[in-house]
Length: 169
Ligand SMILES: [Cu+2]
Image 1 (cartoon, rainbow, N blue to C red):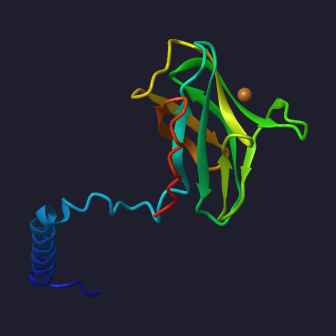
Image 2: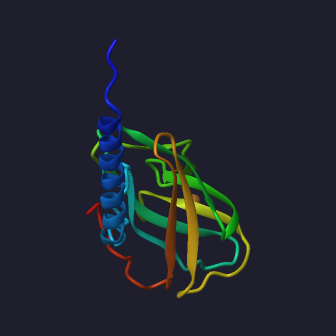
């Protein structure tokens, strides 16, 4: 029966304390790099170029954006909610130009889908108040895999050009 001598044990404790001291001492240097958290990689879903067109009435508005899927697996935008109106739904167009509701919007792996005039939009209905340029609209996008993604969309004047979508960095 052999046991490590007490001095060996104390030496090990000293080493551990010393290491703890080193770690503690290094903390201030690592504070600025808050972005390097333990979550691997960037956001799985990136939304760019979001805007809401200033509505012609105080009832409905349309939001546009481009969704980028940075993962190797398709994802699906399943629902949208907003602080600007009581209802928000995904709309696209039939081949003869009529607006139609979408049950979901698939974003291909390593791909993107743009909701743009003529292609689709998020229809915001029962607006809580008028939307004017300079205001912003909060959109909460729910994805099947990526979960909730919050987007802030500026309200763009009726005749103003749409912002260009900025993809994942
Ligand atoms: Cu619509």
